Length: 140
Ligand SMILES: [Zn+2]
Image (tube, rainbow, N blue to C red; front, top):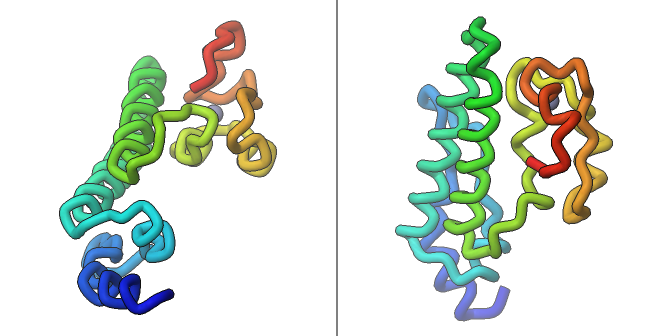
């Protein structure tokens, strides 16, 4: 970090924490925050979106109504796009990382991680969340 970045880091460092139920569960990357020239407002927005995502995951975890699962998958995708906006990245579905982490999802995490940035996903046809995408060529 150069001097300017160090100054900026001092300003933003308290806005990088993701807190759930009173505990810090993750930190946003300070390097990316500096690289993308994000201010406190941008970071607070990103933290808020993560909380929205985790709240949604909690809701999905408890949900037994399978007909709602594809709606939840769409909601998660929308949050992933909003996160890309908030990070000031281009919207790009090939760089989404949350869809295969949705509770009840049975798609292969490692395979899909490896396809990051590539216009391809691997869907398990038995996945309760994404199985219906098997005949659908649109990537989620
Ligand atoms: Zn899945």
